[in-house]
Image (cartoon, rainbow, N blue to C red; front, side):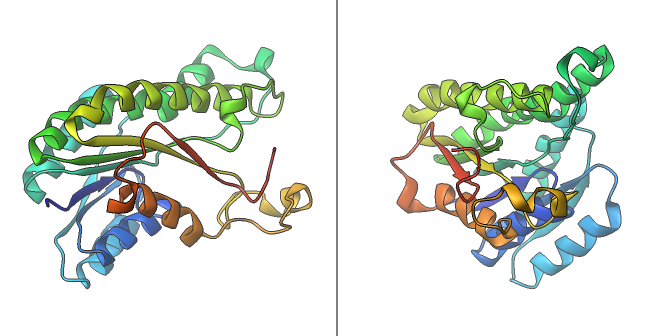
Length: 239
C-alpha cells in the first residue's frame, strides 16, 4: 500500500501535528507552507527522524497554478500520493454587510477554492495509487447552516467544504478513495482563545493531538467503509 501524503498548511499548528503523526505511522510526507519556510523545514526534519522521506514545499494555493504545481512536485518527489489533507483556511470576523468584495474572495479562496484546486490535481495520483484518502477541514456546526453574525463568510466557505466533500465522496468511492471532513471548534492554538473559553462546554480547547487523531482515524484502514462524513472535534460546542 502506497503511503505518501501531502498536508497543506503544515508548517505550524494543526497541520504540522497531522504531518508529524503521519510520519510516525510510516508515511512519506510533504509539508506545505506559504510564508513559514523555517518552521516547515524544521517540521520536515523532525518527520524524517521517523525514517521516512520528508520534504517542505512552498506555494500560495489560493492561486490555481501554484496549487497544481505543489501537488505535482509533492507527487514527483515522494513517488506518488495516496493521502491529501487540506488544512489551509484563513479566518475572519466581520458582519456580512461589512465584508468587502476583496475580503469575500479571500475567505472563499483560502478555504473552499484552494481545497478544490489541490484535490483536482491530486485525484489522478490517488487513483493511480489504487487507494486514497482525502480529509478536508471545516468548522464546528458549519453543516447546520445557521446564520452567524460573528464569522459569516468563513462559515459560508466551510459549509461549502462539507457539500463539496459529500459530492466528491460519492464520485470517488468506486476508486477506493474516501473523502471526509474534520471540523474543529476552538483548539489550543486558536487566536484569542482566552476570550472564548467560557463558551466551551468542556471549558478547555481541543489539543492538536485530538484533532490529528480524528484525521488519523479517517486515514486508517478502520475507516475504509466511511466516506462523505463530517467529524466534529469541538467538545460539544454549538450543538
